[in-house]
Length: 270
Length: 307
Ligand SMILES: Nc1ncnc2c1ncn2[C@@H]1O[C@H](COP(=O)(O)OP(=O)(O)OP(=O)(O)O)[C@@H](O)[C@H]1O
Ligand SMILES: [Mg+2]
Image (cartoon, rainbow over all chains, first blue to last red; front, side):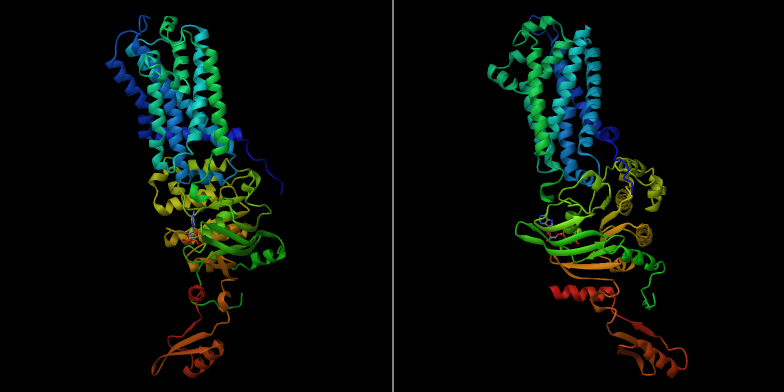
């Protein structure tokens, strides 16, 4: 028999990405919950708060909008991925895939593609809402667009890797939502999503600065909000270099965790 | 086949002579070879020294009570579970070290599974086809499992038996050389079961090696070239469904309605008895039956002895 070539991982990965998106968009509850939740939060916080950030002339609601876009990325990647993968492990979907010649990488490529597209969708929804209601403006210069792009891509990548990695932590699919939401909620509050970061107690700021969400929020603010805001930023600088370093470090850590701890089977199926 | 098959002969049963001859030709060509396979879960020996040889082109059925170790054995062969001990070779590869290429030659229908309910039958089958180097035609496979009418329906809207047929479709879409089926027909209606048998016969005629488990002895009898009975993690006996447990040579029972009522005679030469009866009654023997133990009788005796 002549061996026909196995289809390439990239091709299967793309087809998995399309499939994942199709499945996601057909689950109405998931669409509303995942995409709608940050939008609702934006509406709530945008209505409760008013005024400007310090004396920077920046509308506080725009500050929050940038933060919620960052936390929206984390929701569509880290939280949503972590939960669905844990469920897929529990219901045997992963085991089924493991039994086919699908290359492992294709599964992760598919998840990453789906996460990128959903995050983009989420960002557009939040941005449109923010600009209609709170006057949020698109990046004003090409450099700022570039900043927006790299922070977005790095943020999505890091949170995707961490979501895949953490999916192996919950013992079952049912407990996954609880396990995933704890770090998500805590990080939102210590990363300056709903408050001005520099208003947080300094101990909290230091803890927050250890995790990616703070840096993604700050990076997005640097792309979307004017430099007058720098007066209210902790370092009085956008710290792009440090943002890149922290995200790169988390990306590497996430990748290593994915490669070393990912399980295709339930614990009892070893 | 010259042996008379008793009352349970199924109408669509086909002679497997041609295939068996083909199998004999390549007898040394083993698809699955298992020696002293062991699997422990904690302090339970789920599989406790199983030996098994499955030839290429053969249909082999594993029978055994719940918890006997059938699924554990199959999942080790599929590369899903790690073994505690023993030697295993599946299509020449150790399933403990699976490769993509090797996976592409296998088809797996697990005992339980759970596909994306949001996808349609055609979508999921077509997607899985994309994993394999040489998949079968998607619509043909859907037709083969009898889901053509439901090809556009989402899995969420299928009945239990229909969803099971999707599992079978996903197992054969890659046109496997070796197909594992763990209780494939659970939940099938009688008609679907017959259709499934024909599908399996077709695959077997095409040269696919098949290892299946089942709790339906008529299924094993209709499909399998050889049957292995496994109980308590050990193989109790291996043989053709007709010979298992000395069934072929077991005493036959000839029954008829005599002048004094129902008569039963146990004999090793039923043909002669029937001939004599025929002479005595001068033609038709009233309510004549000739029976041998069914596979089920033999199986139950065998399992009873291991308890
Ligand atoms: N993951 C596991 N952890 C612990 N014990 C297990 C596990 N899987 C199976 N067992 C035990 O191993 C034994 C064999 O199980 P297995 O699933 O192989 O049986 P089976 O022959 O397929 O049964 P059935 O006909 O019910 O499907 C059983 O006693 C079962 O309780
Ligand atoms: Mg089983």
